[in-house]
Length: 441
Image (cartoon, rainbow, N blue to C red; front, side, top):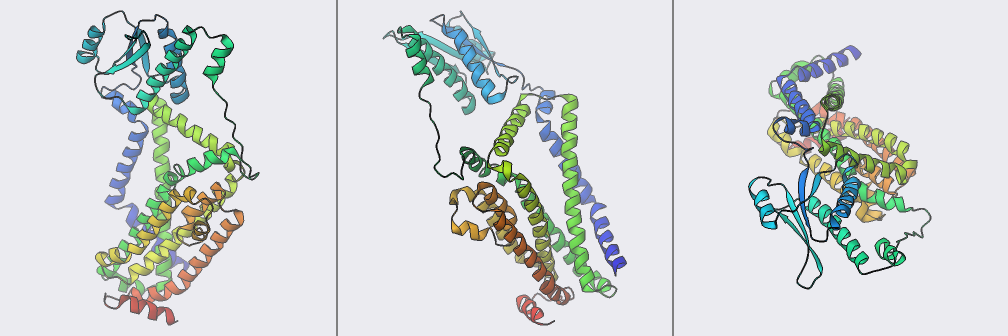
């Protein structure tokens, strides 16, 4: 029995791995991952330059704004991009405004002009000039630096004492106090990040589950459509055949995950050799800040639990979806029928994904807590609720227990359906046959 199971698993894996689709798909995936990681270097190779600093020409009528503006702009850039990722070169110019407009209109289309001048009311004014629209992020950065600089200059010029000046510039310190002793200020940052970052992290699980369901369905339907199913079942029991499908396809998905990780490692290895520009370094810095915020906040005490429980739940959920896919595929006769019956699976996946995105909005509502126990969506909903503090470790363990029970019931009753379905070549009365097969042992 073990030899037959091993033979079927090996046959199924070899069939997938040696297919032209697998080789072509992985070649495309590898190229895409490596290219995305090294996108800045690729663009630079074809003439782009992420390290090229855009010029800011400054016309400073006060003769005092220029130096302070450079310092403030450097502060904002360091805060947002990192110390080595400044994007602008600020140049003090004596040319006329019309001459500078001509320069950015004809030669330096990405350059910017800042004019600081006194208006007709003898009040300090400033103007930001570019050839076309600016990126919102860059516009905010430059305008904030300019407003800070001009405000400081104006306050200095009206003769305020140093003490008065510092009070105005420093503003009022805002202290945060939370009355609930079980919640810290870091939990607010964690909640914000979890509603944006966590859904992105579970996207691979979402996609891999879809692939897993598709693989099992197409394999079973292929064997039924070619009539090879009758030959296979005449040599092995439906139980062994069912188990082989589940094991082989889950191993294949696991192998695909390993390959994707390897492609990412290759991409970063290539990046380390060829070097990179500021765009990816800036993203890496932001990712690092996000992880630092999570690890210093509520997640610091829960990280091990979240990691272990999430892995266990995801593995159990993969198995559960595999069982459902195999059961449904056994009762269909072609790919078109299978596409129709797997609609509930897709809806369930989408429901779990969107609930994980909106988890922070429910703020401990009983509704979302109950849904975290529901099989098939608990793997992507429960971990986010655990990190947000809306459920505890006990609730997470309950989700795992429920998932284990679900897998057991699917194996017990699903096998009965599978035994009847794999040799059924009629699409009529499918659901009636499924329910009747469950009753019969």
